[in-house]
Image (cartoon, rainbow, N blue to C red; front, side):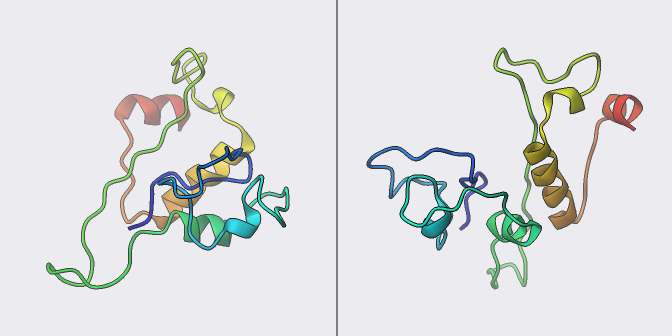
Length: 118
């Protein structure tokens, strides 16, 4: 099963975290603090691979249902600024958000979110 929170190129590694859950497999060459790490923005294909839903057959059939949530917040816990979340998001947040939307079969947004953010 893939983790919901893959390490990005902005995440720093700490000594002894090689086996930590959440580290994407096969990306050791791109992880900060690793030999050969390249400080760059992940491509949309790499993001889609890192956030991909598990593949393969399950006992229930070809694909099981998965629920995923995503949000941003400030260090003090605020989830919006002046009624919108975009001002507290950075370009990397928006790329991940867009990737998650593209991978989803259904996107649910609250009524107030739709009114405020369009």
